Length: 237
Image (cartoon, rainbow, N blue to C red; front, top):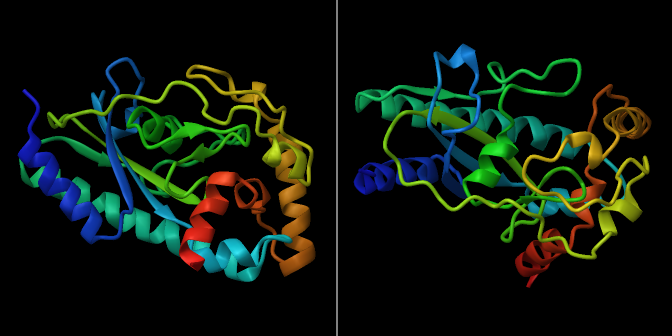
């Protein structure tokens, strides 16, 4: 039986810590990280929106402000999911927060269980032609994290197909021309959506040119997303 009271308490905690979006995902058929201590049947996804002023700031390329906000948001997300982990453990359940020091990318840009996979299965959004999560509320201007648990939380209906339709703004505005323009569906290989190596090289080049920092940040694909623009415009009114 799903524990709605437990979920309400956890959700309230996550929101108090700053999570703007959250949801539960059924991970029954998904392989979860061995480092977490075995299989977890439930994932909890959380998201923070990129501040509107940062989105506006990077319309013409990455900035130092974006670099600092990116890392500050990652630190806040770590705090949020660790608080969720501690809460669930205090209630007698297993839990494992996928913090930045635990969910480490390999040389191929892969983690054992991507946050965006948990987020899509938790109903937060879909994978865009940009190969990043798109949400109704904030577009692609979000940073994500997740935690895994065996708590009997109520899981949302997963999103299994793209809602981008014929839109190609991220594809046409990608500085690296790395996006294939393909509509995502659950189970699709990442390589069908974009060329990660071309994307990485261009991000590093742009960051070096504009800030002097060696980092793979760009943001153009989420800045031009119509859902992101709607979020920005709503905040400016």
